[in-house]
Figure 1: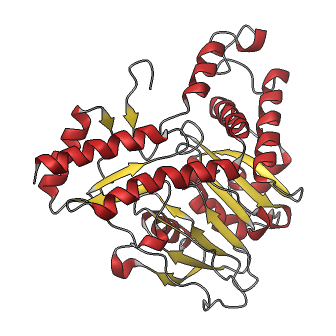
Figure 2: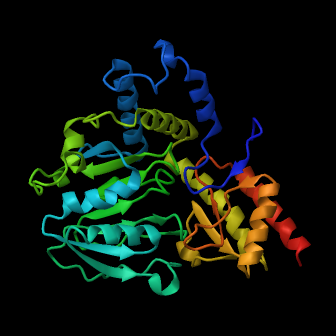
Length: 362
């Protein structure tokens, strides 16, 4: 880490790759001879059109997105999608949701405002510490879509295998695992994610949606901005988009391409997470809260024997230069988020710090 920067384990907004930040810094006052910062330029200008076109092209290349899928840059983050999805995709007024943590739970509550929601499986019985078996779900024939949160940021569970949707459209919230590994886009009807975890600044969601799911025959009361067709038809320029976030995301896409793409990123992520999970598995003080086969590579929740000791750990690590290790307010405990920009040496340094704390508190 340079410039006196800390190791930031925040779940989002999260740490950014330093080469990307350096490039942004160098272009801040004058983007490629335009005489302006990207924050100042018109979204209708040729120079910004090139920025958004390049960002989309690089994302399509990284994920190998088929031509019959649209890539949309929509404001409002992932939370706005909780309402947009049922508004746009509930043709028969029925959807199946799998409840695996805080974010799928919130999506379920929102979707219930627009139609019938069937919670076909849930891991609530064990405080969302595992992914339920979804190989043979009870899915009514007239179900419009099956919804999952593929990586639960708060509870730290991830889907090792996609559910059997029995031919129905799969919708996935990939916010906290977006671009962390190769993804077969054709397995999904729609993938979306808030970008403030793995890719860029807050305030933007990227939606990858199959064209046949973009409908015109919506409830006439549907706000224009809440229709996927609006964004698809306008090339994500119906109104002023989040230009700055799109610009930064574009930089991160290029950074990932230069690393070797998503296959290489997955190797790095597996290696990094192994350092931390190996430590948890041998520690007598710290315990991981997720079933081993469902552990996230991005968000690692863990606990000690008491809230008081958790608080001591947070204070100790903060004093040693490690930030944002406090668990989410809804669950407590501790959590280390190790997204793209967290180097392996940051994880190793944290593990050494925790080992030292454990040795001192025996």
